[in-house]
Length: 269
Length: 109
Image 1 (cartoon, rainbow over the protein chains, first blue to last red):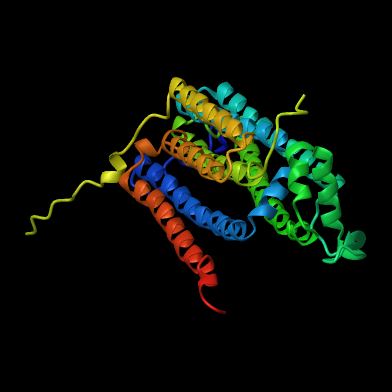
Image 2 (image 1 turned 135 degrees about the vertical axis):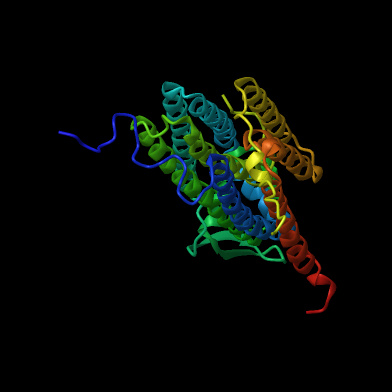
């Protein structure tokens, strides 16, 4: 019996949509649409970075202390993971363009794996911060201190401030020097750095999760033969624009959040 | 009778093959090298200039990433205009916000 079902590797959808004159016009429009979306994303992250800049200029000591308390080694590994994933996705575009379907699936899967490993390291880093008590919050405690006349008093400070002091002292070296020079009020105020840290990296993680979801969808489409007409490489290319943008955001977050403090290479290994 | 001639649609003529494996590899190696440099600077105590050097490296990385990985070098004029608009509006965002917030202490509020 005759059927109008597509053959294996075919799609019901025409390659050129009815509202375009030709494939190049469609490609240009698809690219332009993603670039317009990325402009809104640039301004979205731009607003957060602008707030970060103003606050850091106001409270340089607190931002230096907060950054010093972070783990720069995991962030360094994550930088290379994201850069490598940007490389693998460009190889996926080329594979789709050349009609190399096995290569396309391989490079898409590699990008997904690298992105997922990034998120795994990020989760480990968040867990480490949680274990160290570096979470801003309203909880208060009392510590021994002295007043302006040198008389011993009990001072009410945030639990966060106490935890920050312990973390910096435990790190030793330059971190301990920074902690020793801080007042309890400054340790309290370091919470604002961590609000930016969790907010900015959290937004980045959210974008990564969306990106990985879209990559999985494209991998499934590749498995179903959607990309057999090589003109459809454009969908991989447009997805790559988003993925590169997520990488670009991390390139700026890395020095602003992790390298704003004083770190030493001691204790890496 | 009108002698109107249909003008060619310019952006449809802009077409380039995706970057070659060699170009992508070189771009990746260059970006990775710059990241190594950013880390070395991050672990060095350079004082107040550290943030400016780090941001300078990040800007160079951003330009390489957009021009080569995001293929802006082969993009049509409309895409260039869009990318430059993002940079320009971000510049305005920083300019107007910081000129307000960072000059408030000059007045007796």
